Length: 295
Length: 317
Image (cartoon, rainbow over all chains, first blue to last red):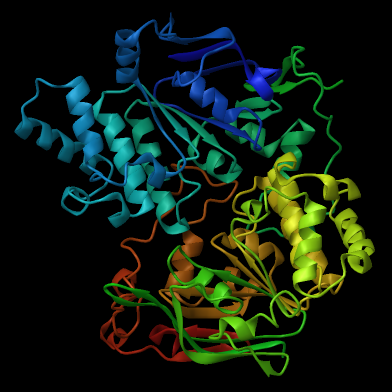
């Protein structure tokens, strides 16, 4: 459904854009309907840039992003608006996603104003209540409140509800639960699982491997802007082939294993080299499990 | 006994009344002990950490004492605390990446800091460089501005600075939450190393991440709505928790290996009570699956076994 084909992204950085920083290098991924695809990596690995490109918040330097086979790059306002009917995003910090001056449910009203001006108020309110119930929120306790009166989990679910008002096909979820409490983050995570059962494609961007493992069928591990390992979650996490993936898995704090118990030292990794050259190609080690070649 | 806190009460002054962020907290810390303090946001864990070093303008010390190495800390008196800060009690703040002065090079900033405490930068510089190298930074960072360092590097600089004067007690407030997993592990292990090398005697690690604190802490305290509900060794808290809140908190953690579908993780329904007017009796009552009538009165603090204390009626028998 959504497909990234050999996507590259370079930013201009430094004084007057004198330097170039290549954030994403030759990334090809695809998401099918009813699938959660996790993109995992450390800070600076380019995972957020991928989400931004899919949401057209930043342009693609090389390569293309296709939705149902058609290039998504919008020319003009009307095309962009049509695209956002199908693809929406939710981001890390629920508190800065809202304007603190207005009531939180204003996000639903803005959707009506720009996409459904013909819908009558009563019908619209019924629809809002329906999607709120769909994200397991009690309309009475979240409507007509200011953002500071609601919890992070409630705000985050309202943003998902807002996206659902627009009959979307793809949801980009960029670290949406890393700021939430342990007791509420599971609600949001399970909600993503329900959305996937309803046929939505979710691009789940995270640095937390255990979350990726819990929610997604396939995972993409990124480092220095390129994909180092990808495949079925079960295969990648039980049998990681790339030293970076192994290091990453070893550093996840877990309740049944202490770091001090494991003998293995972190493996040496290749330093960040020239980012302009194409990254090492991916080879299929077993079925549905690819890993980047090492020099 | 390095630290002994007894009946500590700290309130926030608001226009609507006092928010009882800490409502009678008592615990003690052995020499060389790392205590993890875990709980949801708003449970008072940061307030507890802060109250041992500096109460900010909105916080009021309403009662209780903190005794460090035999001397009582004047926690209610901002100016009197100055003599104890950094040398005896030190903190790695929550947003330590933004704790560095952006207009000064690291070295100059350190010199100014030391001068304000009547210490000589020249005398301490060798030790500073030695410790920077210990955490994998070269002497060159002293000539860098904070903006030139990555988040993980800034975090390590702040850790070295906070512990430079060998404080007896270190409070590490959410030091790993803004980092990614590889840096998280490095930072957490550095904390343990600092303790092992004697740079700090004992440590309180404030975090919402139970699986991380399990990796490094000797003892874990779980806080809920301004009170400590359970305290035990890290192993006991994770393997055989007694308080329903601790159990629910552990049940909500996704672990590598668990997948959506086969076994759905459960969240804790409801939300913590507002501390403006906390409920009487057990504060977890409304969300607790085991709650019954007796929970309407204050739960007793039960010592299940040596070093394992639970505040819950259900732990009595």
